[in-house]
Image (cartoon, rainbow, N blue to C red; front, side, top):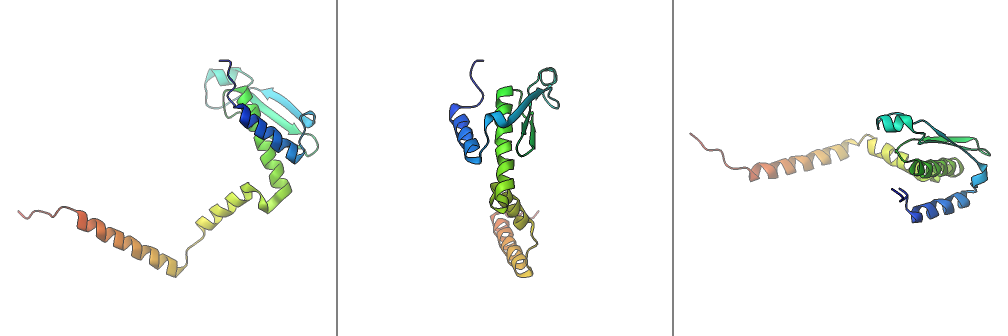
Length: 138
């Protein structure tokens, strides 16, 4: 298999993002280590897991999600960009927004909201009851 598991457009987009964040390749310390976890012998025998360290910030990333070294290199760099962006932008970052969204979803509903939701559920249940076949009396 000569094809790279990561498309050229994705690589170019990642390179542009790294430049935007001020991450240069010479600043990265990259090591390939033995993988672990699911995947069997192939994963445990090959050094497909990528360890990446950004020297100026000290951010470390370890990625062994796939069996392909090239794909893990891409994923590790993307994770590094995400972490650096989170550190720089704080509350405005995409990750922070996702966390806030989950927090809002888990927030307890008000009594009025809960009553309204339960009322809608009862209406839906009544509709379903009307769709049923009539029970035969024997």
